[in-house]
Image 1 (cartoon, chains in turn red, purple):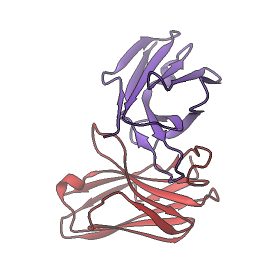
Image 2 (tube, each protein chain N blue to C red):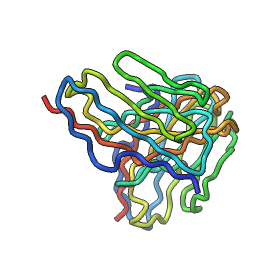
Image 3 (tube, rainbow over the protein chains, first blue to last red):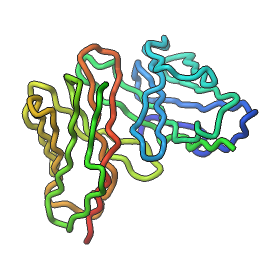
Length: 115
Length: 113
C-alpha cells in the first residue's frame, strides 16, 4: 500500500447528484494533485496544490471543484457531471513541485461512473 | 503541442527475455523523465527517474536510457518474470518547478511463463 489513501474506491452517481472524492497522504509531502485517467488515454493533470494553495488548474470544467484544507488532505467535489466524466480519478502527492524532478506517489484511485 | 508516444501495441515476451519499452516525445525539452508501473485498477507506482544530463540509470533489473537528441527514452527489464506484467508509463517534467507531469498512454507488457 502507498501512503496515499483515496475514498471511495468506486462511485456511481447520477448527473444531478453531488458527491465528493477524498484523498489523504501520510508521507509529509507538501504538494498534492488530482489526475483523471480515461480508458485508452494518458493521465491528465487536473489540479495542483502546494502548501494547500492551488498552483495549477488545467482548464478543468467548474463542475469539478477541488478543496485542500491542509497539506495532507485533498478533496474533489463533483456536481452535475456528464457521462463522459466517467473515469479513474487519481490523487497523488510529492515532496515538492519538482526542483529535483520529484516523483509522485499515487493513491489507488476512485473509479467514477456517471449514469 | 507537446506529445508523448509509447509503444501503442501490447508487448508480449517470454519469461527470462529482456523487455524493451520505448518513449518518444516531441515539442518538449524535459528536464526529467520518469517511468511508472501501473497494475489494473491501481494507481501508478514510481520506478525510476533520469535527468536530462544523464544517459543511463539502473535499478536492479531495470535500466533506463535518455537520449535528448533523439528525444527518446528506452526502458529495459532484464530477466523478465510473469510478475513484471503490467502497464508501464513514461512521464516528462520540465525545470519550471510546477509539479506538472506529462504522461504517455502507457505500454502493456505481458510476460509469458
